[in-house]
Structures are given as structure tokens and as C-alpha cells.
Length: 272
Image (cartoon, rainbow, N blue to C red; front, top):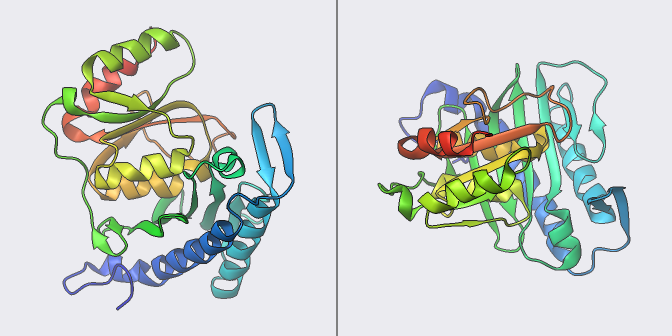
């Protein structure tokens, strides 16, 4: 049985089963490459003052891109390292070959491979693979979010005071906004991989996720979609749509949380 195809599935789930199976296959293949080079990442190049890339990022992205070109040759590709295909296409695969490169290069065991299919501007398939834990969170449109093919759901905690949240805030009034949130939740964490942290909302390892600035399409396309399919409410920091394929690099912010707590968290996170 293909991942995502179960008896009783809706036609839309069956429709995306081939793409979901390929996404899972490729992030896991790339993950094996990444895991084999853990703590041996090779030379580091600097993309900016706080952003690096390794030869492993390039190799993992090349593996994913080649696999997609073989199976879906008419689809476009948008990768963190190689950029966006010049071809305008309704179907675009969005890839972050190593989300959490600084963690990876420094030997910190929290990073992932992320891949999403975006059709007409919206994610319809997503897969996030943790190479060291050997885990894959995935989803397809109108199907469940899964962890290693087992359905998962967002946290059911009733009290905001019990929430464990991935929290990374920038912009105006940063300290005040962080303090407001921390007063009302259990604890916050910043792990260094937005995609892995956001995907953890899908199975409740994080009850909620917020990063207010600095995100790109490849950081959130798969993870935000998986969290959404698991029942999270996912928005930008104004409460609007969370995904924009045309957004500038590092120009996005996302809040993902169970519906019960989303509105209150959004209120606490507003600037001012």
C-alpha cells in the first residue's frame, strides 16, 4: 500500500499518493546521505553573517532534484541552494536539503530534510525527515498527517499554561512580546531548525510554534502543511494566510497552534 492510501480515503488522497510516496522516498534517501556525514560535514561556506552552507546541503539537494526530474520531469523545482527554476509551472517542488545547517555543521542533532509539492500556490504534499531519529512526518491534501505512516494529531491540551512552544521572535518590542507569551505558557524553546520544530506541532511534541521573521518558503512549505493536516491552525502573524511561494527570502513568519489556543497566542504575539 502506498503511504497515505488507506481504505476509505477520499479521491483527493488517492490522487496525491504517487507524489507523497516519492516525497517520502526522496527525503529519506537524502537523509541517509546527510546522516552519513553527520559530524563530518566538510568545508563550510558563508551565505551571510549568520547563514552557512555545506557540501552536504548541495549533495542532498542534488539527490532530491535528480529524483524528481526522473519521476516528474514537467514539474518545476525551488531549492534553498539552487534557487528557483526559470520555468513557470503550476506544480513546484520546494526543498530544504538540510534545515538546521548550523546545527548539522556544529554536531547538534536537530536538523531535517524537507520537501513539499506546491500546486497553484498551495502545498498539497509534504514530507519532513529527521535523519538521526529515522522519522518521517508527512501528509497529502485531504489525507491525515502521519509519523512513519501512522496518523498523528495536534496536542489536545486544554490549558494554555501547559503549552510547550517553539518560540523565535524578532522585530519591534521583541522582549516584551516574548515575556507576554512566556507568562502564559509552560515553557518555550528555540531548537535551530524551523522545519523540524514546526512539523513537531503535528504530533504534539511542540504544542505550538511561532517564528515571527526570517522564514523562507522552503522552511515552512512541508512542515506548515503537515501541521495543518494534523489539525493545527496555521497563519502568519497577522492571522492571515501562512504560505506564499512568491514571498521574499527570509520574509515570512508563521504561528501554528491548536485552534483552542491560536487566537490567544496571536494576541500575545502582536507587536506593541
